[in-house]
Image (cartoon, rainbow, N blue to C red; front, side):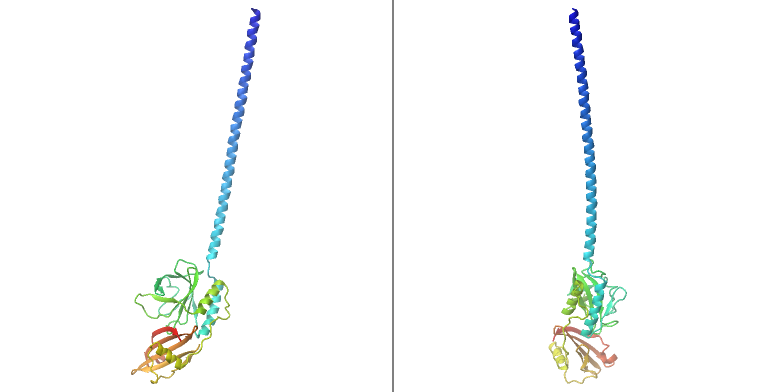
Length: 315
């Protein structure tokens, strides 16, 4: 009986010891599990922070790249500057001399005074047409803008009058250099000021070369033009059906030569009337013809009369 009691006590002790070891093992396992979970969480948070920093750095980098790209794009769009402006001034002085004309430059500090046209201050408010197509135009300091024609320079050979005048706009149209000209001195049915793209190859080439930085501004490449004789002038007028009666009494100053090879023909008509025909040679075997109809009482024998015709034709 005593022996059984010892055996029972020993059994209980072994069971208790095994239970304690089991509990300790569970605690160790639970602690390890908790530590592993915490470690995973820390690793996860640390990785997230690194990803945020990476994304932030990437975003800042992209922002800098975009800013640099926008700056470079803005610089690339600039088509005109003060150096090109000076180059054009030199070119126009020489080209005008070759053409027998004197041109003045106009900008924001000085308006044109041509047939009541005041450019550039009224440029954006004036209804314009190029080759009979309505267009918009605006002054631009660098050649860029939202207008159809962004004007960077204006040149005209008259100031306060319109006799034989030429008004040039040096522009950028769709980013390309374009020279526009008008000799219009009267109103039109559509109330627009009409321009056309200049037919003068040397002027177009000169402007394009200045824009591209390839200009030789010391002397334009204008081809030489031969002077117009009185006989040729009469033949040109007859070809254009412009009435000029050979042999009719002619005023003093008839057949007067002009700078650049031009000529003036004068002729009386009626009791007090006088007609003045001015022919100016142009490059490309062209000639500009203007006709004024006045009276002998007009200043300088009709030279102050308005121009009734102004055309450029083949010689």
